[in-house]
Image (tube, rainbow, N blue to C red; front, side):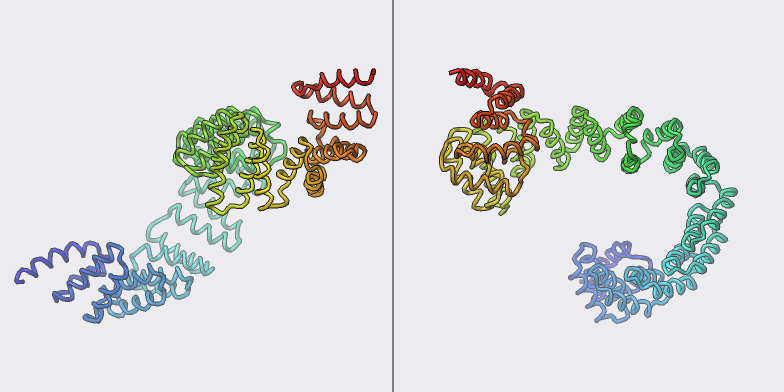
Length: 571
């Protein structure tokens, strides 16, 4: 035991190096071995983040040594970290009572008041600190911010003048003073102040603000003069590049606008978000892109070359090129994003969706499969792969995908996804000539959502094709057109069921309505309408619609049907 002191003292040196200066002084005064052991244990737990255990040690220390201000300081820190503002303030005030000249205790108390929006109390703390530490510049700046927060511009200005007298002029002080003019709504006074400041202490930031204020007053010549002064000091200063270009754009001088704004977009020092947000605003001007497509394209290429590995830029550019019809470039940019950040779900998903929108089914299946290796069980990717397989006529593989979706939906209790899964599984089973399986899945879907129009329509149509249970088919199809009376697909199904029920006049009304809402673009609907017209004896009109259907899709065998019906009429 006689070596205890030799062990404790080096430990004290190590732990004291972690303390603020005020607490170090207190710690070095501790000599009792028991007190020291408790203090060191508290510090150890505090530095390891075990706040509850640290609190126990420091509270024990306070019980052993009630005048231990370092313990108060750390108990205040623990209270602050655990959002116990009341205890934090109490401990700090107790610590200040023990060591009234300690800067750190008072500063922390001020910060606690600021956090809790007690500006008057915070101001009082820092005014007292200023009396104790008149040479600490941080106290002056804290008081400036507090006075500004309290709308006390007179005291804030006086404090800034004291700082300037001690430290000299600076851009930071000028901006703080300008903010006071702005708070007072004294814009002209603020402008005059900045102009005078600029005569002695030039700064691209100050000169750009002066230029902005002149631009707001439509004094374009003076605005350009100050933007040029700022750019002479710093040719890559983004606000000046942007502001100078805007002066020309708002004047309608687009030749100068594009010449001046291009460096803004080619500068690697300008954040990509700043560029894209600016363009979003400009693109809101009606017909801007259409009028200046060539120049805008050039700007977009500049951004791509300047920020080749920037996610924000790539997404914005991909959207631009996609809207302009350049789908390949859109896809390439999204692929670049995906390659740069393969671990990010968003970059992967944007790329896969782009392939889906381009209807590149083989690429979609491959990309979705690759993505599912990184994000297994993702419902959207599973569905996209299922869609690709459906389109590629890989029926069994598509069924596999949608059964996987069914499992995901059941696990997540996602009714909407489950209805989609059952609906498509019904379609897929019908594709493989398994009408019994198809109808079983449709029934499952309708049990969950009796008003699912897609399922009602497909179920009704397939029943009509088989000539089975037309009464049930009629009821289901009627629900769809009551819900969506202008949907040509649903009108076609309902009209065809009416035709099969030997109600050609009622069927004709449905098909005429379908023709008004896109039915003329479907060969199948035109074929059905022609059948109805032929049944009603309107043969010439029927052949007109059959010919239109054949032109849209020559694989339906309509040309042979036309020959047969014409031969039938000659008998």
